[in-house]
Image (cartoon, rainbow, N blue to C red):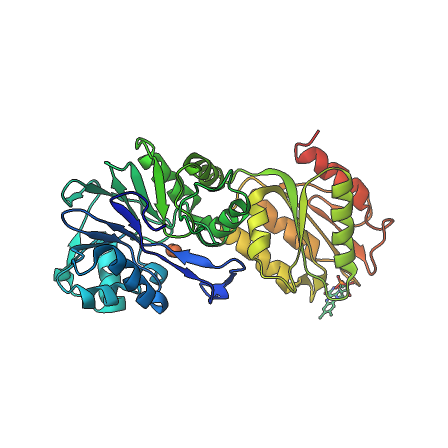
Length: 404
Ligand SMILES: Cc1cc2nc3c(=O)[nH]c(=O)nc-3n(C[C@H](O)[C@H](O)[C@H](O)COP(=O)(O)O)c2cc1C
Ligand SMILES: [Fe+2]
Ligand SMILES: [Fe+2]
């Protein structure tokens, strides 16, 4: 059902071919590129789709407009997953007017050779009448590119939000969330999408949400995943929390290990946390894409990183993961590191220093425990509970995570 309302039609496509979104992030359930058509005296298209799917996209549009023209193309976001079918649209409807923010203009020219006279630059609060429908444009820069804006349809109380409120996974056949009781599996996929792609921009997401807070939003049409109606408030609430870096009690355990000793400690910590009733997820960084581990950094209030000492430093997979956390400006987490070494421990100390510079609260075993320091514990060679008491650490984490 691609008819969202009499005037708003869904003309997006599903992508089950791409294995890594942006060349980085796994897509186990696929992804959709959502585009919307507003049917009125004049017709407007909001965003396009990845050009690899342009034929299906044009077919979808044709189903709704037949031989009638599309008069306007509104570009909320220039990332090529949404803009790369602009040339196909312009070929079919050469008289179309493109509306975009000023920051999008050089991108339209640079990517697709579109001359400036084809583009009507819109600013904050500008509007476009299509007949009965009046669309207004709201600049929301850096959600997550500089040109990003959102489009508001007052008569339908619908926000076309670009990537904001989007999720990995595809919408159901009904496109909207009407058959969902709650976010279900979309919740984790939305957190994963947010943490992987938008996560660095919590402040600008907050600014955008503040700016839009006066709107009485009935429906959110984002560029990825279902159209949110019934669950619009839940989705906005989740985005609010994520952008404020708020997290629930629990632990993201992420570790790298060459010979299995740090891995054994990680598994032991997970087991003890589970026994103590602390939600936790464990991620082997040597074999797993960091996508899910980053999701859990945004989900849980405690990060536990396992890394052996490697050439006097942090084992590279753990170092990369720490860099990814830092790059997302993650705030307000509790932190503990652990790891095996053979002759001179360094990784735990270095990880704890990095965590401290990110403003994380360091937790750990009592300082008098051998190998222990604020923010972690190093143990020589093979793991054993005598060298590194994960039961005691799980108990300390449970208390610090805010669980009774
Ligand atoms: C390339 C390489 C470099 C290492 N550098 C150090 C080091 O600088 N200091 C140290 O104490 N141990 C070092 N080690 C030893 C490991 O930290 C040690 O074997 C540890 O038990 C490995 O933990 P794992 O089983 O979790 O991989 C190094 C090992 C390798 C293979
Ligand atoms: Fe994007
Ligand atoms: Fe996108």
